[in-house]
Image (cartoon, rainbow, N blue to C red; front, side, top):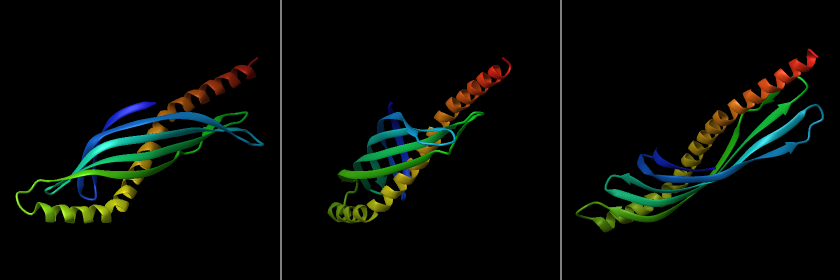
Length: 166
C-alpha cells in the first residue's frame, strides 16, 4: 500500500502538523500447528513525515521515520475460522531540519534554549509518537482485517453446511 495523509498531533504541548507518507506490504507467514491450520497476516511498513511543530515563538521543522508492523494470527479448524487480536510495533526516529524563532528580541538566546529543550525532550516525544503509531496501526489493521476474516468464516461455514447436507 501507499498512502499520504496529513499529520496533526499535539506531543508534549507542541502542535505538530505536516504530511506523512506510508508505504508497505502485507504478507502471509504460515505457522506450524498440530491441531489446526494457522497463519499470520503480517504488515511491514514505513512512514516518512515532514512536519513542523510550534510552541511559543519557536517553530521546529523536522523529518520523521517510523517503522511500523502489525501481526494477526488466523486459525482454521474443521469447524470454524478464528483470529487473535492484532499486535503492533513502531519505532520512530526524528531529525531536526531547522528552527525558526518568531521574536523581535533575544532570538539567539531563544534558539539556544530551544535546541537544549529539543535535545532533552526528543526521546520522550519519540516514545509518545511510537505509542500513538502502535495504537493507530493496531486499530486500522483490525478494522481492515475484521471484514475479510468474517467473510472467510461465513464462506467456510456455508461450505461445511453444504457438505453436511450432501
